Image (tube, rainbow, N blue to C red):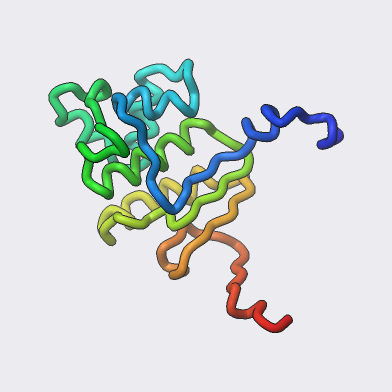
Length: 152
């Protein structure tokens, strides 16, 4: 396949990006997730919530998947919002993933639960993982430190 033949929409469909700032919309948990995959079933939503260790918390909400997250996700804790945004990237199932500080706002115990699941999901994908601290990233096979590039 010649990459020049791909449309912008085809390119965008292959890339998933988690920004450093968690961006959620004033709608339900389900609708925030379905921004990544409009036709996703509830079972698929629960599956990605499990992957980011959010399934139990969402199932404890009275409205569950229909829980309103509020403007910028303010009805959720910072860690819950971050995991919901990460779940949205996972649901999209892109070939290329860019994760900028994926574990920000997450405590060490939650990171420890999510890391192996995220490592398994990232297998076979091209991933650009960005962080100030290498320990705050999923496993990768190659590291590039920007300070090593200064003056070169």
